[in-house]
Length: 260
Image 1 (cartoon, rainbow, N blue to C red):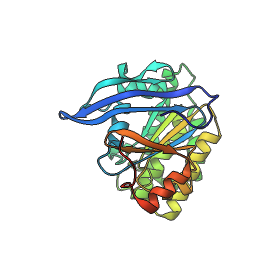
Image 2 (image 1 turned 180 degrees about the horizontal axis):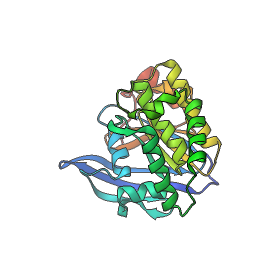
Image 3 (image 1 turned 120 degrees about the horizontal axis):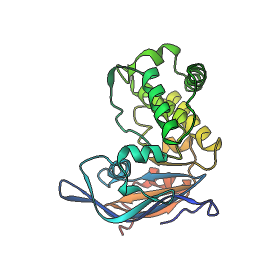
Image 4 (image 1 turned 120 degrees about the vertical axis):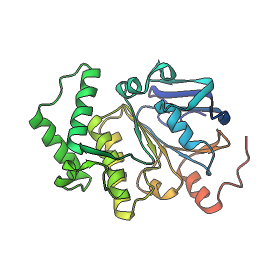
């Protein structure tokens, strides 16, 4: 499957016939997908179809074995990179279940991450004053209180706070490609709108970026309108379309789709 919009832009992510397994069980069974710069794609699908496996394979999480196919990221062989090299190259993963890091404040974590990213890009890191100004401004955009920044990373956070914290990290680190794994889970209506606005601004600010969202529900797509919606079933993409496809899935479920 290829991008159905923005065909003049260069491809940031090119997945060709990807096969992967976990504990000897095949999960991805020939998945192909191209995401171009400046575009937003959404992947939907039933439980067990391989959505989170795809996210984990792209991020380089241990325990996921690629048995066939290729993945190129901005022209590079993504599968040959270590996880930190993928991050430095501009790949960002917003976790489905963000982990807690007790004893490390959000502020310390983000400053260290931004300095590492700047070093990898051979850029001059922000001064402390510049960092604090940018951090507070971005946190305010996401309705995160100032004292939130002093708390341990995700420690005692509500579901909505954890997901907004992921978007805070994304906006500050400014990756080329953001992979959002069920960022809408656990969000109420207000938090969903805040997260949606944050993701929209991320792409609108720089059209060389792209976003791939994994979601179960059409409701997130009320706030982030994707250029392309894909359906993942039994380890491969079986249908692609525009937002109307998501609305059809909401009404009819997945049973009507012909499995490839």
